Every structure is written in C-alpha cells, then in structure tokens.
Length: 385
Ligand SMILES: Nc1ncnc2c1ncn2[C@@H]1O[C@H](COP(=O)(O)OP(=O)(O)OP(=O)(O)O)[C@@H](O)[C@H]1O
Ligand SMILES: [Mg+2]
Image (cartoon, rainbow, N blue to C red; front, side):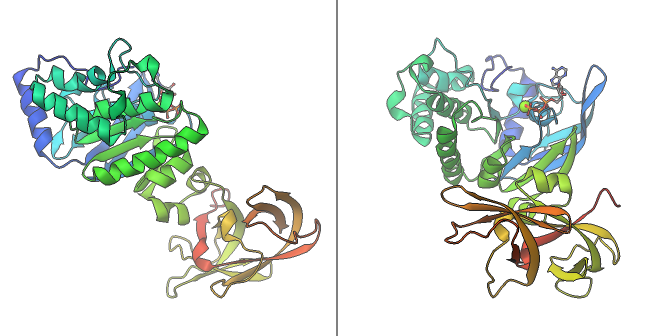
C-alpha cells in the first residue's frame, strides 16, 4: 500500500499545485457525496454520503470488509470512485492526484523508510515539496516534539519499538501540515497496553492541533468511543449509522450499531406510548410497564427493542432510576474489579456489569434490576418490522 501523501515527488504540474494551494486555503472538512467504489464490477462502497466536520475526529468503524479502508483510500486519492464526489473543504478533490490533496496518512504497519533515520523519514514530504533547510529543521523538531520522539531523531526505524515507529509515522504525516489526517488502524499492530497509551497520546495530539480534521478507521469500538467526536458505522459498504459519539452510544438507531458500539442488552417490548407528547416513552413487557427515552419513529403497538448497556443496569435502586425489572439469576462471574451477572427475563438473557459485590446473588434467585429511562433507548425490532 502506498503509505503517505507525503511520498510525493517534487514535480507537481501547475494546475495540481494550484489545486493543492486551494485545498490549503479552504476549510478542512471532508465530504463524501454519494461515493461508490467498485473493484472489478463488485461494489464495495455503496453511495457513501458523509461529512467529517472541520477539526473533528470521525471514527469509521465496522466489521472486516465493510469498506472502511476503501473510503479512506478514496479520500487519499489511491482509489477512484465509480461515481460520486469527494470534497476537502470547498475544493472537489475527486480527480486530483494524491499529492495535491493536502492530506497526511498513517496506516497500520508503520511503513517508515527503513534506510532513513527518523529525521529523514519525517522530513521526506517537506524535502519533496522543496521546503527550505531551516523550515524543514523547525518542522521536524516540532513534529517530533508533538509525538514525544525528539530524542530519537537519529535512530533508524529498526532501532525503535512498534509504538515508537508509529509515533514517527504520525510525525511524518503531520510534517507537511496537512489539513486532514487519515489514520487506518494505526494502533492495530501494537499490543494492548501500548495501544491504550497511544490512544491517550492521540487524544492529546488532537487537543494540541484542534484544527486538524481526522478520519480514523478502526474496528476497535473502545478506541472509537475514546477518541472520536462522531462515529460512522459501516456494514457491507453502506453507512449504517452516524452521529455524535455519546448520543450514538446512548441511543443507537439500529441493532447493528447498538451491538457494534459495545455490549448491548436488547429486550423485546411493545410500544405503549412512543412519547410524542411526553418526555418519556412507555413500553410493555408482559404485564410490566417500563419508561424509556422516546423514539418518535415507533408507533403505539409496534414491537421494538429496549436497549440498555450492561453497566446501566443496577442491583440497587437510586433516586434517578425510573424502572424496576424482576429477573432470574443465571450466572455470576467475579472479574476482580467488577462482577458480571447474567440474568433472564421473559426468555431474554441480559448482562449486568456491577462494581464488586460483597454478597453476590445466588444462581436461580430472583433479582430486581434498576435503571433510568435515559439509559434505555428504543430501536425498531428488525425481525418484527
Ligand atoms: N484492490 C482490491 N481489489 C479487489 N477487491 C478489493 C481490493 N481492496 C479491497 N477489496 C475488497 O473490498 C471490500 C472492502 O475492503 P476494505 O479494505 O475497504 O475493508 P475494511 O472495512 O477496511 O476491512 P478491514 O477491517 O479488514 O481492514 C472487501 O470485500 C475487499 O475484499
Ligand atoms: Mg481496512
């Protein structure tokens, strides 16, 4: 894979150079308008319409093969859409060559030039642009500082750990002062502990560079939830859900998004009152009525799924808990810092994550679960539309 738009040769033709300058001046959103990509007649990205707003981190998540990398490569210019348009800021880039798009890109397997020292790797794009020696020295120092690698400037990539190499790759992508940064699973080759600390570093980097727009491809939902301002969920080449991170997690629009964003308990219910005229919806499960966050696309009498995250179910009541749900205990697992309790209600198994319990419930016993209506969202039941 071509790894970076910074890997350009210096010979830009005049129209492309003008376009690049225009991209540089424009605001730095990324916009897909009905972008379709096909490989040998097979559509792998299907009319993608999506905007990454200026300065935000948008995480593109979805299962393997869902078209995430293809979408990112279309922005980078390594894949040509069969139809649709891509804009960076106000400039349409659909037909511009990669080097004229003003982007930085980092992929999962480091892809540093092995025969170049860290400094030379980071300065590569600037040298290709014919930048002055002083400017290059300043930018390289600044970018290595941003990723905390100043003291490694003279090392070769083989003398660095995986996490350090990936920091250098990020510094290299930042050196050309890209308007947008494209990251394709940049942490997936690292082990879990380094990944966690790199996630924190990326969050800090974004605080340092608030104007940088980031399209972040991952299939790790916790990375997406930690880093992203908004999340787009892909499935089979199509956009399945998109929204600000918190609300999307809290009130996912469909089952796929609910389950892809983390563990979700989905309880079949019947809509009693969709909440058109009241702040809360009412749903029925057997003889029991529960309150939930309204979903105005569901009508009275419709079958729906009540979605509650495992940690939102509590074994003891709090003043803000609107609901009590009697269940039967199936399994209790202690995991050191938490208890995972599996319960059953009306044929559905639910998972409860609780702080460690002094007296865990007995298997087979009855257990009341308590939860707030704001932590219970309603989804269409796709099996019973
Ligand atoms: N160069 C190519 N030629 C033919 N098919 C391709 C090519 N690149 C990708 N595909 C196909 O396009 C589909 C989408 O691939 P893509 O790499 O975008 O998925 P992804 O969501 O990034 O998956 P992963 O999480 O595994 O990286 C897949 O079915 C893949 O096999
Ligand atoms: Mg991919």
